Length: 387
Ligand code: ADP
Ligand code: MG
Image (cartoon, rainbow, N blue to C red; front, side):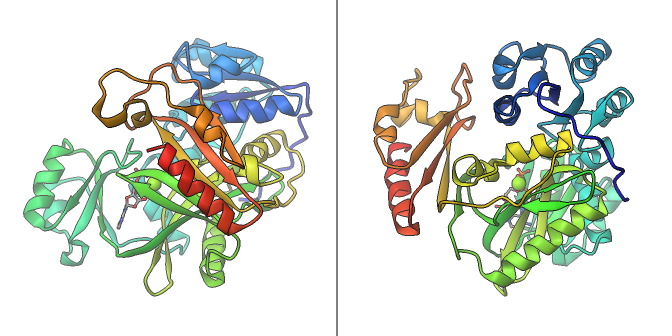
């Protein structure tokens, strides 16, 4: 699994990204600010990243001509989401440098593969069973109930998940999910949730951002807190050790985020991994001297990785489309950005999505301050503005 030495691709070259969402857009921003040209492949003519990139290839992820066009434009290619078909990345890798590799992305595409991978690497995760047949359903161990049934593929933001109390509910839930391959996980009593973003270079160097604490609402990340001393040292150590083990055991090159559950006894279990920057790492743009997107540029380009330093306590609040629909209004209303920007240390990031929809990630706000107290107090005021 030792990564081969890869020559640096220097500013002036073109970096490509599969996917044109907000993660791709922030990658493009970071690449351009370092003097790279950028190319984005996304079928949507108005994708957030496509709109700000030097070049936008408007084609489907499996369109051979589109992939050839991207490979022609770009000197190296990365991805902004895990559901890019692995075959597309494999095809691109025959033409240009691709990181992370198709094999690593394929693991993150499938919860069953992902959990087996964690297990194999000795990384603790929630007890689970793969439900892919009536027989598997019947053989489910009693200890997995109550549990959460999750589709193995294509779930995000809590979608494709149903909590099940008993066997009858499990059977019904599997039917509701269309009897596709699922993972049943034991429902754990979470003390809190954390994640960590790391970057691993072609030479095996690993650097990481601080461990982040995450609060979800309706299955969607709502708030990330990154406050000095907020996470107990033994928890942070377990998280970092597990994330490193996953990166090394996967031969991973690029930015990797791993989500964890912290249990009441202080033990830590891995939940899932994202082979890309992550919503919970957005604060790094404003609160760290190297953002997760600059880390993505550096790993892809084979540039040196230096340890990021957080220079301010930070709170990140997601801005969902719901904000455009105050108290049940039918027509969208532009939020009062001036009021939010009037708070000290507030950094507003909007992704330029044309249409606001409930539950859609439209942007985020990062609050930085000199002290934890001020950061929390300002975040509480910003949260009131953000509904
Ligand atoms: P997604 O891909 O939608 O992010 P996750 O597997 O991360 O799916 O689940 C979303 C959220 O649901 C988690 O962040 C956590 O709050 C809750 N959750 C998921 N699995 C479990 C579990 N086994 N026990 C308790 N809570 C869970
Ligand atoms: Mg998750």
